[in-house]
Length: 301
Image (cartoon, one colour):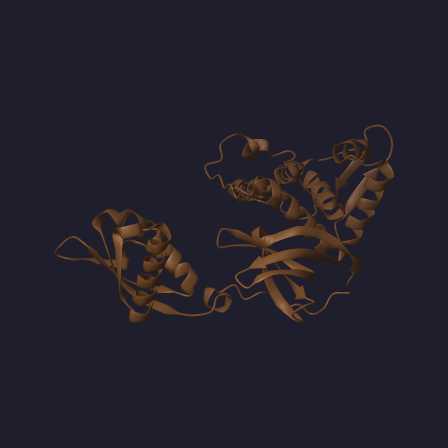
């Protein structure tokens, strides 16, 4: 991409006294004419670049120009690399690390194997997820409509959207866009999207409000539950809600008051503890759990 190349050229010029056009062309895999156009664009952006022809010549930033020649500190570059590597873990490529290498010419210390933070955003759905992410990114850049089949608790439906944002939240990936079916902005979970493809139509783009990613906005409901857990469940309560979520009783059981914003998730979460938990309140949730247990008992009788 052009902007990546411009940033890369500027980084090299900030870290080297002089560099030649053929060197830049080889590094960024373009021809010399493209490099000269990039240099012109950097000059138009206010960077005083000097070009000297002939033997011993080259391209450099004007001597005395006051600008920090190390765009980032070593720690900042380390943090950037961690983020870029995490994106590569999703895409299954080395695209972002290669970009980082272009930005790091002349200051390779942080590229050596001394990173102490590793982030892996890949999932069980890595193979299909990478394809969806790449297609959505292309649709956003090209302003192309996106078409897919969507699966939700209300059933399956075909959707056409104008995509605007690709989002990672709650350990999952989402796309935020204008849904032609609902005539409004909607958030779609990538793992529920199938038969994803680029539509034939381009869109002009509309004023797009940033998505509200607060849980109470994203999910309906608001249910406070009082429950007693067996002592052997403590590790999971600490992992998911922290040490302060329970009060230990005289018999060793753990009394919890937890808030849920979705009843389906609430029921699934409690059933994962099997007979390690008893829901005390609210009564309607307790009654629903009893009825579910009765139906399951009949099913397996």
